Image 1: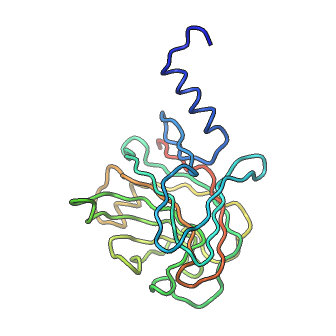
Image 2: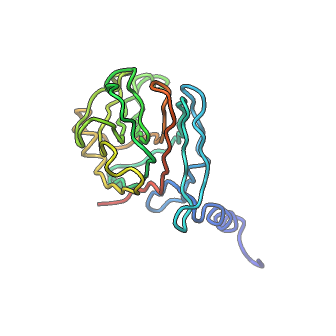
Image 3: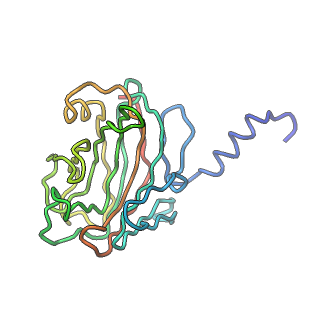
Length: 215
């Protein structure tokens, strides 16, 4: 295209590549497709892939006795964009009796992490996990079974909405202050994970856009 600047051409290429993909979207920023986020494995590899669902591209996750997540280091200013919205769907919810507050039961068909980095090499970092819980009531929260530095918050519970897209809207700044006991002005990383490594079996979930916006 005659006269187009290299910078503008790069923006156009980026937007074209991400159009329609499930992405992290922050006001006044370019979208970051979830499929392109680096993967971190805890046990094997959850399979992540872009699929078409009802005319849009979403991220499909399938864990078969595995636990790996998609992580993105991205500073998000919660003074400017404290509202988090997203949607997800799960195929089924485990009906076993494992206690999700224990290591043996620490599996979730869908979860979304927000990480606040602290200390040298992030060793004192804190996090909250919005989770689709099998048994814990919506609104309940508890320390992660493997680290007290992460708090689990149930935003969905049980199989009633399995097979359906469910949308959420959270005031992240308020959630962090309430759960971590201090004011938090920014998060430093965001992640999603579908896992079934502790209880075994198959877990499937689909993730749509994750968006940060002003109030």
